[in-house]
Length: 258
Image 1 (cartoon, rainbow, N blue to C red):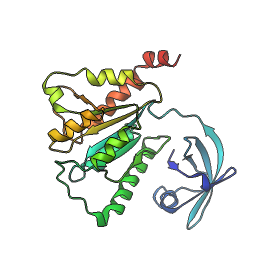
Image 2: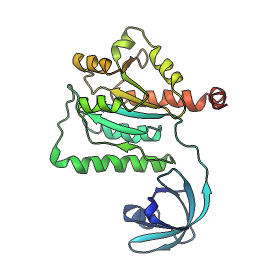
Image 3: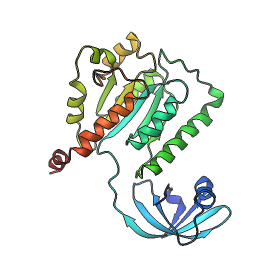
Image 4: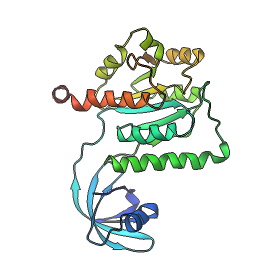
């Protein structure tokens, strides 16, 4: 069933009115008709099965027929921060990271970032990132949209780190030294509903000064295993590890809830 994220202002009682790009998608891309069913996800995470009543030129009207209880989100909120990589790598991280359950994406200006940030195109670029996240969240049948921010300074990133429960940075020197225990211990130590900020460097990794400042800011250096991963692969590795820890180890998870 096709899924759409809608706002509360689009709902009047049991009727949901969808406009803009989503209405166009329903009418022109999916070619739906009255009587077809769609899933509407509201900002509080509730999902409603809706039956389309009308398809007009500028909107689609649907009626709520059933509310669904869904558990599609990671039990812990993981924010992915990354030194801006070049090309389409950041868009790839947003798309696949959304599919894997990330709560938010925070690019930052790293010392070794190669990409040049054009302020004139900044607003459009961030809007594109948000669109990628929205489409990926719909495809993955998530119940919440990840937050997508404009690029931050390192100072702003460190300040954001003060708002979460745990923070780490993926540091290849930990892997080269055979120190692989930090990440499993950190994931196991998170509590349901906890928050984690995971920071990744750009193609050239962190500068010594950045690594020093992250340590001073309370970020734990972590290995992602014995192999050196590309900048766009590393965040996905961490999210997959978190999914295994929190969603696939069912007996441990059920015991933690009791």
